[in-house]
Image (cartoon, rainbow, N blue to C red; front, side):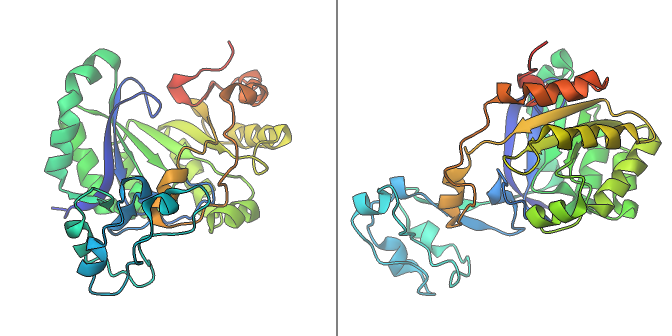
Length: 320
């Protein structure tokens, strides 16, 4: 029996991460450091602390409670909340995550990121939406972070979900040994495979790791005949050029069996607050989100090649 893992969120009624209505389970922990990461709270495999300046009244209770001198003294709340402020409540390099500051905060300005769930608890939450799965063809999607950083938990969770008749999707980058990935796939209906970049040097520059294992595993999954939906985060000045996507088409056409579809995921900046809450800098702060319709020319490249494709998954199909 696998022990519990940290989960940052379980989201209900999602429509962009597999067919039908999905319940998405976000595993905490990732073996990449994508520069554009839209879920920074899922990167670290341990509890973290959000500090929300808008809720903080600068009462000083957390400063008194902290045994590590890891809290900055109070300043006027309006100054801490002002645009361009560099003030942050927690001195992260001193923090041992004892969570005493959270216990002391009466205003919900400090929150624990990550909650430990057992497999039973995850399945209980997922099955709340079971009537909607039946009507829509939906089910459970395991995401992250990177779910394969907790392989034993994921393998057992998926096996038990399938035993209950649930449709399953696994959202993964595929960065793990095939000996780990292969057995897990036996209980996966659709693999949502993240393809950041097909050039290994570019992949390493923006994620911290090369892509050789990722591409090798994708070919192996294709050989099995498993249903694959390729998911491509389209990032400004990285992989948003038409020529690049022509290369991706050639690569996908070289796989042993066709992928079922490609989902183009336009860059957005909705995660900026989460970086601030974690006390992290984000290189894309201030970068404008990509308007989904701007990806229509890229969408056409895949469709013209005979590869079904969407912009954003089920929620925005692009032009017909």
